[in-house]
Length: 97
Image (cartoon, rainbow, N blue to C red):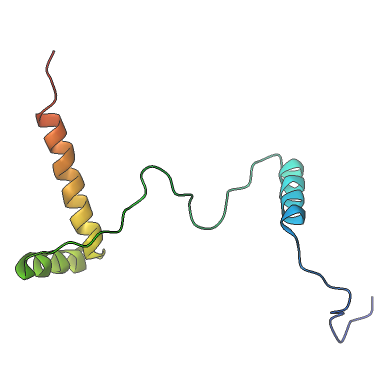
């Protein structure tokens, strides 16, 4: 087989979405398994909302220090704390049978 010294750009074309889909289906048929999707996960009902919030500087410093200690982002830490508190509040106020 001869080595090509230059890429034949005149013969090249962009791969269309339809061609990508056909290739994906062919690979899935050959392997017998569904291929995982790639890229950013689809946004659904539980997507995060971008908000602006004012916090006491001491509370923000504490959150940032705690987040650094745990190796996570401070917004993630604040979200975890709020979600934990929200879950505890739901459990506390649930009706008893």
